Amino acid sequence: MSSKELLNYDHIVIGSGLAGLFTAVQLSKLGTVAVITKRGVDESNTKYAQGGIACVMDKEDSFREHVKDTMIAGDHLCKEDVVMTIVENGPAAVNELIELGAHFTTRGEMGHSDDGKDYDLGREGGHNKRRVLHAGDITGEEVEKILINTCRSNRNITFFEYHIAIDLVTTSRLGWLGEDSVLGAYVLDIKKNLVKAFTSLSVTVATGGAGKVYLYSSNPDIACGDGVAMCYRAHVPIANMEFFQFHPTILYHPTVKSFLISEAVRGEGAILKRHDARGNLVEFMDRYHEMKSLAPRDIVARAIDNELKRSGQNCAFLDIRHKSEEFLKLRFPNIFEKCLEVGINMAKDPIPVVPAAHYCCGGVKTDINGFTGINGLYAVGEVASTGLHGANRLASNSLLEALVVAKLAAKDIKSKIKVLSDTRASGKIPTWRSGNATNSDEQVVLTHNWDEIRRFMWDYVGIFRTNKRLERAKNRIKNIRREIEKYYWDFLITQDLVELRNIASVAEIIIDSAMNRKESRGLHFNADYPQREPEMDYVDTVIQQPYT
Ligand code: FAD
Ligand code: SIN
Image (cartoon, rainbow, N blue to C red):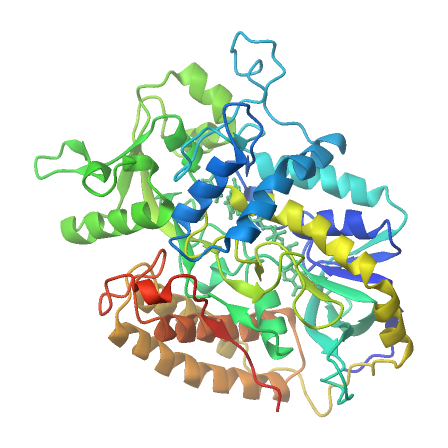
């Protein structure tokens, strides 16, 4: 496959979740924007966000307290200046979203007898205050819908749906001398089976997370870590990938996969329980943390894992039966309905739950503006590691980060536009060439490797790690990656192949990062080094493909 198709835009954004769409809205003030997205425009992690956006909107709350809760959850790895900037810029960014038409649930709508204008703020794990703005329990769907409409009605923004970015094109990749700059990206048009070359002044990678690297995950299929893998191949440093967050409460059911029971349910008083020897449901989080069921996520997920392994039970239970059916339907309409579909009435039945991979706290290392260090190349949203989350993300801080950093990235790009224009003027990128590659003969190689990676990552690089488990995982991933790289160069490119290659690369980065960190901290627990080492406070794990 080769292609003569070359497309020019002032700016490229890869991904159409909250980070990509909000960045596109900001960049459209500077010029034309191509939003490249590998499925339909609304398919993203963002679409499934339930709890909401953490933001200081209440006079009883303060920036200082939000910063403090974020830093505590992050277990001595957050960058305080980054945390402060994101928290302090939160209200302005959220208000911009509201001006675009986003609606968040008010206290009046929840039946409280105030003036009906104040927002109904939810609470989640690790937050000492109610500060989570929500649109019922479908916050992500609400913000995604508003931003898609905003982009669709903006003449400067063009969507390229079912287009998957394969790789970034940088000056170093083309063998140019001087400072490394991004020139564009190679993109597979999935429906036409054609590789296109996009050129631009800036490229913003907003490809979201990598939950699909694990067998059980709350994430939709798009979450393959594409952005991390592409940036790694482009020699951008990748930080703190050992910190993969497992959400404690995914619905445990044989036919429903990946359905989240929001932490906001615990925020409204739900208690985590398990069966004791007599078959009674008993609380257990009181033995693990003073905040009990509302402790930070790393602690809750590990506690559930421990309880289940010790007792041999399949799941824990979330008990909110003390709340009325009327309240639960009003506050959690989506969760209530989904549970009811499978015969669980939240007001009468405890909800069976298990932990699953949820959020990638590490990622492409950037500064507070999403800048990667390569001229013109930015990473925003879950794909990035700005320093906000540290070793464990505080609930509902990711949508906040995506909003704030999208604005800062666009501002930074604006300030550098002259330099970026000069680089683009100095050369063209070649169109894609496939050499002698042929159609794949054995699709089973892809499915087999995909399944194998996800299973050993779950078994060996999950909530509870040991040196031996990590070594086993490392041996397997080395072989699989060798096989995939050969396959990649021999056969014509397909979406499955691009995603498998990326997930394998991300798996290896997670394993290497976990092996490098010889302590336990936040989400990374290694039984061979069970303590947090004070000399590792605020020390990132950084993995970078060297320039040769
Ligand atoms: P995404 O929303 O995942 O968007 C990524 C986009 O990139 C998608 O459009 C995808 O198709 C596209 N893409 C990926 N690779 C490529 C490629 N190679 N080429 C082209 N396109 C590509 N966070 C909160 O703060 N509050 C919550 O309440 C909350 N609830 C959550 C509930 C669930 C079930 C899940 C899964 C996550 C939740 N999170 C929550 C986390 C949060 O939703 C995500 O971190 C956030 O939405 C990420 O936004 P994003 O724009 O960075 O990525
Ligand atoms: C949830 O609603 O529990 C998810 C919140 C988050 O991941 O931030």
